[in-house]
Image 1 (cartoon, rainbow, N blue to C red):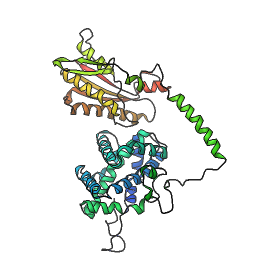
Image 2 (image 1 turned 90 degrees about the vertical axis):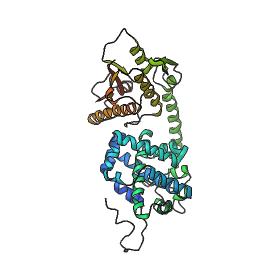
Image 3 (image 1 turned 90 degrees about the horizontal axis):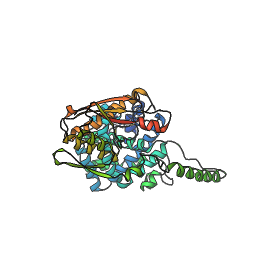
Image 4 (image 1 turned 180 degrees about the vertical axis):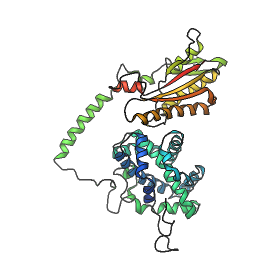
Length: 403
């Protein structure tokens, strides 16, 4: 994509024109890219576009804020160098939103940058974007993390023109304030303390839709509706006493130490996936393969291959067990429910299995011991007509093919 010849515009060489990063970023976020992003996160294209329209100015404003101090500019410059954000990724931007290893890596790196920019406010910002665009928080989190490398690569490419030093970067980002005025979604500017990004005399407005005044007669009705929604939310959020998948149930699960071959011990929840796997591997009564185990507490962010933080210990414990039984070979199988496109579901299930395998292999298990497959919605174990059934069908299985 052409970037209008760098810092020189129609006024002729020698007349420096301010670079509008917002417009440049919009140029990369083509309808095709937005469509890929919407498919990846499982949201509509219109909602994804709206989320992106809020994310871009929020991230640029945060980077401009950080670069406003010497230390901040130097820190941002180091992040560009360390992450090797030289602009080359912009040549194949579609791969960033296509799932698999590239997307997984980008999300991880993006979250690290977000933590540097927003600190403890990252989760709050995610909720603000989700509410603004009408998407799930998990979708907003993934989009936030994926837009970060796009912007960082654009900054890296601009440095070849403006100079590599932190001061040049600070100057470029400082010039963006005039372009960002009025673009931040309503509430985000005040949430992050960026009142300066509103136009003089104005409050921060959403750049997707103008804010309309609420008719006076509607206020009592809205208040009543809020009370009803709070009550319904309380009823719906109560844990099901019979559910074994609630957070509360997992929190009180009794931990037990497994004594593995070679004198190694690993602590896992009693009755869990890893507990059952070890009991079977250490037993002599049932030795028939293949033997199938369904992961518990192995979850991904909605419509993505990003493992949730609470799922990491499950994979880590599995690695310890596989190391203790070096002759064991396994296959990871991904499954989904029938929600969404069948072809996309199958690809997602395969990609998720691959991601888990990559973690296992990077932890020291030989690659030839771990196979993968993805079946999407082809092999349900429960009816898809109910949420409970769909939850059971969204699963990852481990099949022991050799012991």
